[in-house]
Every structure is written in C-alpha cells, then in structure tokens.
Length: 348
Ligand code: SF4
Image (tube, rainbow, N blue to C red; front, side, top):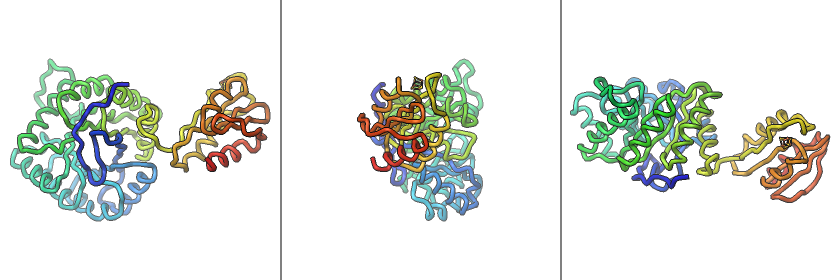
C-alpha cells in the first residue's frame, strides 16, 4: 500500500481531518433538516454506529435556523450542505455549523462568495469544495475527460478561496463512474495540499453500492489518497457508516468493532454455516471492541483460520472445536455454538 498522501490538517469542530489524523467516517442525514427531532434522532443513531461527522441539507432558511437546535442534541460536528444561496451559508454559520459544503461557483457574484468566506474565516470554519461529475460548470472544455474537467473546476474554486486568503479547505471530486472518480482524485492529489474527502457518489442500493464504493474508495486508500470517507448509498445512512468502516478495516486503516471471518462453506461442511455465521454476525453487531471472530465449516481447513482469530470455532458433525488466541480450549455441542462462542467473545 502506498504511504498516505501528506495533507494540511483542518479542524471541523472536535474532529481533525487530514494530516496524520485517522481517516474520518462521515455520513449525511436523510431526514428533513427542519424536522429537528427526527434529525437529532437519526444523528444519534449514526453516532452509535461510529459516524464522526454528519452533513445535513440546508435547502431553506428554516433548515439553516434548525442547525442551532440540532447541534444542542448531538455530539458530533455538523456540516451544512449549501447550494446556490449564499445567505443560507451565512445563516448556517450563525447557527453554529462546524463546516460548510458548497461549490463557490454556484454561489454567483464574487461579493457573495467573499461574504461567506469572511464569515467562515472569522469562525475558523472549513469549507468543502464539492465538485460532482453530474454538475460540472457550463462551458467546460469537451476535449478534457470528465475527470480532468472536474479537477479543473475544483482548482478554479480553490483559487477563488485562496485569493480571499482562505485555506481551511477540503476537496471532493465525486462521480458515479469508479474509473472517473479514481482518475480525478489521482490527478488532483499532488496539485493541492488540502485534505480530500473521498467517495463514489450515488453508488446505488447497498448490494451494488457497497461494492462500487469499496472498489473506488478502496483503490484510492490503497494509493494513499483520502482523509475522510463517505459511502453514498440509497439506504438508511447507518448502512453508509457500517460500509465505510468495513472498507477501512479491510485495509487495516481503522479498527472499529469486530471482524467476522466465516468460510464460504463447501461439500465438507456438516453444519448450516450460513445460518450460523448470520446468527453470530447479528450478535456481534452490538459490540464495538475490535475482535476477530472465526466461524469455520469443517475440521479439515477450519482450525487454521479459527486459530488465527481471537475467538473461533471449527465445526464438525454436531460438535465444534473452540479456539481462543490460537489455543484449543474445548469442544462444544451444536446447540451451544452461538451461546458459547459469544460468551468467549464477551470474556475476551
Ligand atoms: Fe469447506 Fe472447510 Fe474450507 Fe469451510 S473451512 S470452505 S467447510 S474446507
């Protein structure tokens, strides 16, 4: 894996993004921001599964004003997502937003951009320049690839903020198309010092969206690119947080909750390994400590993997060998597989 790209850290509320800080997991609420109770409730749910930054849509003044009350009910920093109306950005800052996501190009006249940048600077609030492949500025050079057009648009926006002596910048360049996303981030990474927010946008329903995101985000992380991650799914945002951690855990970039190792099963297995692994996964979902748990389907190849885990079982006919930290610690009956395995996990 490539060493992580060096970026200039920024502070979003209590969370550092970039530099040597851990890669931050974020999501976006799907509630109506004006519905303060539902939005707080969803953000708390996201906090419980490990979300570290949350973004809310700010489509109007009522949503901007709601930020103040929402902030009182949540523990993680909040980023206001603004499009077009600079007054909403000013109101969101006034209401206590910890970050802004906007595209200065959409704000219009320089005086309006200046007003937002001035207010953000006074409060040391970072701005994410978010360029999406689907909303490139009109008049983009058709000779350039979509990725290059995205980078060009982002560099123009960055230049605009820098010209106003503002450098609390984070950048994202998202596309639905994975190769375009990768090309865009690879292109911009050496050109700017700012932290990069990475993701594949509108990735789809969880089954395919998680795969697209894992390929896109995973490739970028492998290249050392990315300081904060959002997996965009057509699903409850908690699924985005779970998927983001799985991607980071797969590359050993973050530890968060258990890792379940389960074999694909084959003709050798004498238990219903799918049902067993699902039951264990369900029980593990309530645990936030990092622990590696193995559920293996036979005593031929199973013990090797089960030994490698913190706690594991290798199942035979009606019985399983129980391993803890590589040592066989007992034999358990089929009716006790989940109960005893979980007891050992909890003791670990
Ligand atoms: Fe088959 Fe055993 Fe390997 Fe599972 S661990 S896939 S049952 S050989």
